[in-house]
Length: 98
View 1 (tube, helix red, strand yellow):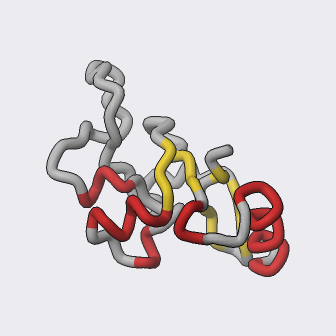
View 2 (cartoon, helix red, strand yellow; view 1 turned 30 degrees about the vertical axis):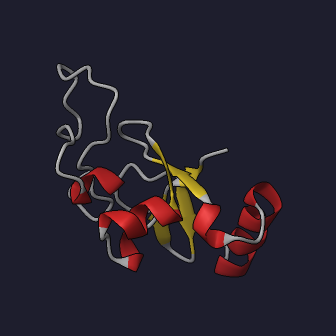
């Protein structure tokens, strides 16, 4: 899909306030708002691309099946294994957390 189509889909599903848009990490399933990324100090390019846990002091390792804590992970969309499910203008990103 194109960036414009993706933005339209986001507005339809989550409203016009982008800070309240939610994204679901494909690795740990944590749903995070854009505002949460900003509060964690994540760069803008990380929103909906890497798990917010990368910028939080407490997180679990991505793909760690033994760690059963219901917390964020340190998954990076730009890493060796990219499981981001949505493609927008050639870049794979998280699905919206609706």
